[in-house]
Image (tube, rainbow, N blue to C red; front, side, top):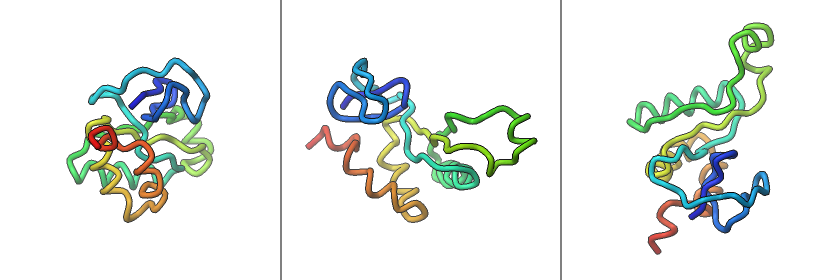
Length: 116
């Protein structure tokens, strides 16, 4: 399994399927990986679900306080809800009920896929 440091995406092959960069490297258990790509308030809801499950999480792509204060959370573009690669499968299981798109993507870049 490879990892794009720019997109925070675990993927097959050398080239990142999102940005096309060919500088992907082997993924490490602690690498922050995108579990979900959504707008607010869904990102906050996802983070809360993950925190309740004991999975460390952070949001990549957040804009500064001024932008959010001026335009509100709904004015922001989508953000990546990230978790450590080692917890990616568990995070997707937690999120799948509320976010069906997570279940669709899970089989494509699953950490357990390497074990098979």
